[in-house]
Length: 228
Image 1 (cartoon, rainbow, N blue to C red):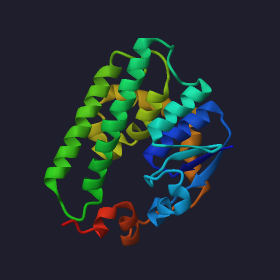
Image 2 (tube, rainbow, N blue to C red; image 1 turned 135 degrees about the vertical axis):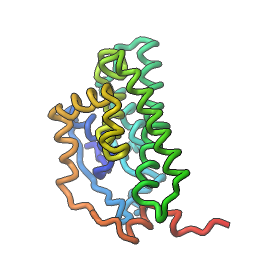
Image 3 (cartoon, rainbow, N blue to C red; image 1 turned 30 degrees about the vertical axis):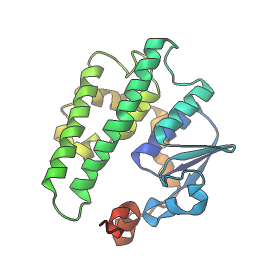
Image 4 (cartoon, rainbow, N blue to C red; image 1 turned 180 degrees about the vertical axis):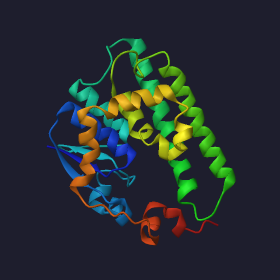
């Protein structure tokens, strides 16, 4: 049975949504990153990068949420658009746009606005600007298309949902409210039964809630390292 290494963060939620939408059997393996469980040797064998999510599909290890989505979709033939060169190009382009842009910039915006040890206005402004820029591109695209790839609900929409459902936290409710088309899609996906199940997976376990010094050292390893 497929083992799903996860916590309640945005990237694992993308994969959780796919698994719940697909009705695939899987075993949950919680990884409490605030306790440093991502650095245990047994997990590093699955993902040497020490991050969630990751899967063990009967001995096939896949890490990075977007790689997992592609792997599972292609293996199971689910949540892919009709197989044309144009659709394939759009799927890969938008999935990588989310993987390399929306996700990282959103994460850095959250970090510098909520967890940085002091106010760093340059970093705060840069990452918020880039996050807004990515949302604007997505919003303009979704003004012309029901889903990210034409009229088909795909893994790209799941990848977008993973981060954009927290858009109000990242950008503030007023800031996120500017992107009506993104919000329309997020609300549609959130209303799906599989989304509720995906979000609820974290409640099956007790993850550390406190962002204390121990958690910060595990989550933000640079705090322990002096670079010459």
